Image (cartoon, rainbow, N blue to C red):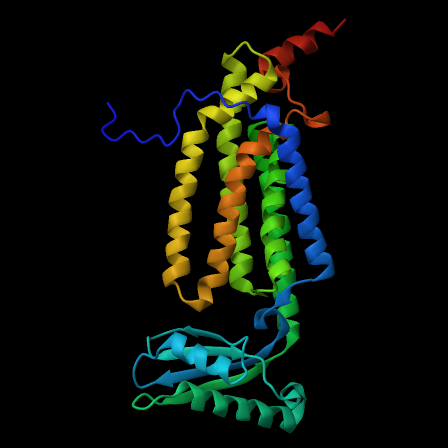
Amino acid sequence: MKLFPLHLVPNDTRIDFMRLRWISIGIAVLMAVVAIGAIAFKGFNFALDFTGGTVVELRFQQPPDVDGVRSRLEAAGYGSAQVQTFGTGSDLLVRLQPREEGAQAEGGAGLDATNRTAQEVVRLASVEGNQATVMRNEFVGPQVGKELALNGLYTLVFVVVGFLIYIAARFEWKFAVAAIVTTLHDVLICAGFFALTGREFDLTILAGLLSVMGFSINDTIVVFDRVRENFRSLRVDPVEVLNRSVNQTLSRTIITSVVAFLTVLALYLYGGGSLEGMAISQMIGIVIGTISSIFVACPLLTLGFLKVTKQDLMPKAKDDAALARRP
């Protein structure tokens, strides 16, 4: 007996999602085109993680007000400064782009400019009764950022290939292709948002995009698993099987998404400025991933070479067909 049954959507819904497949796929393609256009023509506003800058480690007498330090740096002209605690609560890590071009020069000139930037950061970060001291300051060149960007790209490729292998082994290659197309669509929309709005793109946002891939693929696999079960138990045409599968998993999909969204919303509200970008990317990814798992993933299995049939999910039927073709 279920003590606490929770169904946001009745289990016996009969919404005809497949009837809307051309509209939903058309909207998905349009959003993808806009995202690609934003990335191609506007590009990303890469943060210091990728462009390089000055890194200053500060130690305070008491735990500092991180948001206050960030606000004072922004008012002084360091609008892209990244401020976060590390180690003990009294340690602060500040990464910012120097306002002086000499900070990027080689030799003593660059070192002097970096030191001047560090001293100005100390002045702006300190408040009466809680003075800051410099523990370390150095300039990190853009080469490190290029390596981080490449590592992020390698990670993306590794994850995509891993998903393809797993889904193809568990289901069929058609399901693998549909799942990867849906997942990449979700990540592309999230990335396009940051390109379109010009928000800074840093490593936390990259981590958020990778987590969006995980959420999207998990949601899609749950729906595909129900599709496989229904193909083997129902005697109806494939479109009806896909419709019933989406309807049967609708309540689970929405509940999971709502809980995940509330968790990330708490991170956005209380996680501070350093985690804001990651939280935004995850919230967008949860919304887009939920919609795509309902309106895009299964409709793809009704189109062209991805059109799924009962034989695709019935190993015994495929074996019988192979035996019938033998002389």
